[in-house]
Length: 277
Ligand SMILES: Nc1ncnc2c1ncn2[C@@H]1O[C@H](COP(=O)(O)OP(=O)(O)O)[C@@H](O)[C@H]1O
Ligand SMILES: [Mg+2]
Image 1 (spheres, rainbow, N blue to C red):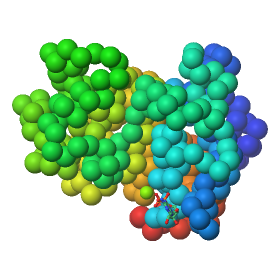
Image 2 (image 1 turned 60 degrees about the vertical axis):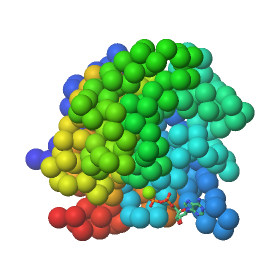
Image 3 (image 1 turned 45 degrees about the horizontal axis):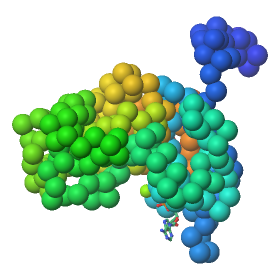
């Protein structure tokens, strides 16, 4: 006999961790975000929340608004409407979208890291790789070269970048290594939020797998709230706990990753999933 929905929920509940559910609000909470570019509505009424230690995957075809959502969450752009809060001691209850430009930049630098698909967006291609990471550390006020270099080395090591290449500029490195430099820069200040926009798209399959392993390890060790955007469902499956499916700027379906990817309810999600089989 099929398990009833209520029984299923009951069974599921047993496996959850009640103290965490009761005591911890989401680390990241965005609500009703709408972003227009001229006549195009890139993001429409998108809400999402991510707990510390959780990975939210965003999928959807090209142009569905995924990168626009990440730019909002990275405070690179402001929405036409919506709220965004991080549950951090100095920011409780603050809608980050209402901060002035300097406070926004400060909040983003200290609490949010981002890796773009295109390394040119995240890196200075002609600086040394260690310099790229060290630059991010300057906001701490540290100016001692040896200390900055050591901190950059540690961050590059955490992103499993080959340290014998740390003085090479990104432009001479492979695509996989460039993404590791971006990652090292993104996590250098130990942010609580890590945003990844198609971080492994365009990499060879074996390189992609290695970068995904690094990301998994980092997530395990640092307990960040992670949001990964990809049109590659394999990448989402490998990393995400929950998935949000976007189409035309809107969220059409969301839920646990296995549930959404194995048993999609929305016709568009079904199309996406079957296209990848
Ligand atoms: N800076 C911009 N100026 C004008 N239109 C934009 C801009 N950024 C994104 N768009 C438009 O917004 C929509 C969503 O784009 P995007 O967020 O890049 O989607 P995705 O990352 O899912 O491919 C697209 O129609 C795109 O052309
Ligand atoms: Mg995009």
